[in-house]
Length: 164
Image 1 (cartoon, rainbow, N blue to C red):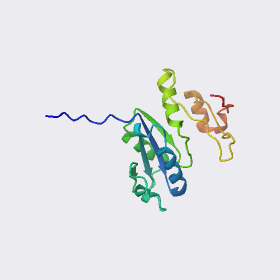
Image 2: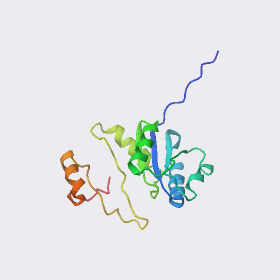
Image 3: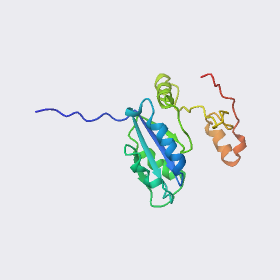
Image 4: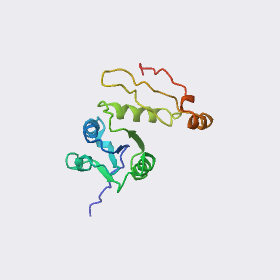
């Protein structure tokens, strides 16, 4: 009798919240599909009751898990649902407007796995014109987070080290 081996869980789950973002979601999914570690990555789209063609993208991307919400419950609830159903060792939250380069996910996973002091990582984000994103912040301490809840300007910006 042959013993069947169950598939190993994915190394990373990419979780995307979508609400009426068909065009950008299509580009985001195409970029993730061409990732260098695609075979180790689960892609989960949480669709918040989109009225555009977003819910029908599952025919174009059959290897992507689509979770359709009956209505838009808000970003926090939708991302929590996506995170709870994710099977990967790591979760990569990504906006549908973001297109990753081929090695982005692999590099993020490698960084997390090589640095025991890191709890989270984020790729450098650039506009389509190649300009670095204008708002970057370090993860806040609980005290700073509490202050930022009432005053978002309390989060100090940082200049990213683009050489890393």
